[in-house]
Length: 362
Ligand SMILES: *Cc1c(COP(=O)(O)O)cnc(C)c1O
Image (cartoon, rainbow, N blue to C red; front, side, top):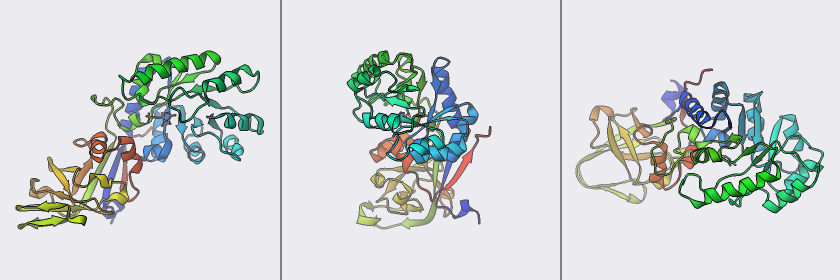
């Protein structure tokens, strides 16, 4: 018995596709801008221990994570890379940054003061808010900091776009203008504005560095347009049981689905405890034997049920797999059906799946 035999689902991560996606974005922004990689939240749920070395092998030199512990873990994986920590330093964490050569992104006046006066004093990036109103110094705070000689000399000035996936949003040009204004206060400091989607807004948004995350992992960077990225994730769920139905009956908790005619229902060993959203109840679908099979009834903790009446009988038997995320039903489509975004589908991917990595050899 292998781990794969025992698992209720198989998650295949194509590291070559991750690398190809990174190279494509690098080609769009280079040679004037550097293409970093954002690998927070365990590389968007795909496994930072495999993803980060694959990206480093493709030539990525700079990584962004959200949390200090993510940075500490990443340091062991990519000993020579530059690592930025987006959430910045929390009180008492100064030593962790210096010891693991992590560069904090300073997001607020308090973080700047703690970093510069608290005996830390290593390299730091500075985040200026340009309209997201989540993290970053206000423009007047940046102005007073820039006017204080010797206060801080950041190695990167950055901001974050709120609506970049919508190329029509007026927010984008507004944030760009505010970032250009901020940049004039620190003209010698390298600058970074774009996430995945921001890269597709055009060269004016690239500055000296871009910070894609989701697009590396196959999420579409442009809402409502064809996805230029390669699919990275395939999720398959294993059939536990088949049930032939020949009289009207209901399926699952709450009896929310009723089978009326004759049919077959397949029960698959994946559920919301695996990060498969409960909101896909009676809305999701799978693919098996070249046929789309609707998810029927509620998603339960460990199981889901599909109406496989239309699937070729030889493709649906106990132990066979139904595709849950993949070529026919990419992550953005699944997210749509679940009423969320691809980011949340990926970062929710559970840990009971057998994780299978392909490609990525240096
Ligand atoms: C998460 C994040 C990114 C990456 O965003 P994607 O949309 O996944 O490309 C870049 N910059 C900041 C500040 C982030 O928080």
